[in-house]
Length: 202
Image 1 (cartoon, one colour):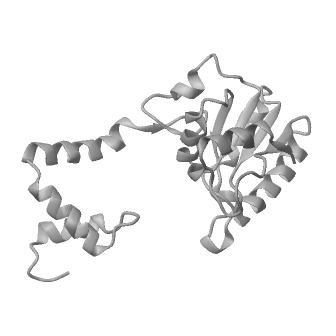
Image 2: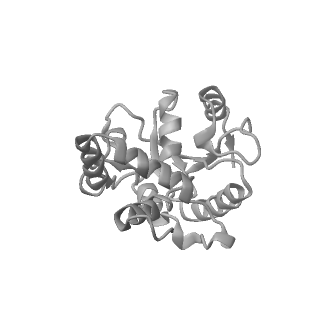
């Protein structure tokens, strides 16, 4: 960065530019905006960022972010215990649950098989998944992984693994109303509702 930029500002811009969607110029605009804020507002933002590490944790049941363990979804006694919807990331779970049409449990896989991005089976949260299935409550595993090539490969891997270890569990997937190449978190609620309602056996 330009040597005329003060070191504290340069350091902040360097950190901000590592965030998704922010290059050096965008990061500089954000930093300059923060400098124009009232001091109290800037300090509150800093405390909120620091609080992410102190106050958030991963739910031991689903792997989602929460201020409590288990999270409110997993702790809800009204939710059905026999269906488990497997999603790649936490924001996909939020998108599905916002619709209010799925009343079962969730679990977050933590990604998809993608060898070119060094994502193999060891990168996925398979231990949490097998532990949940071994409890014996789940009779159907719904794969809500999207419609990308990586999602298809991951679904095939999971179908083989679960069928071998838990032969009594039905494995289904969202219906193919989801366009090829799409991710669950970007789908509208009606598409997701129909995809869940008309899910297919694998």
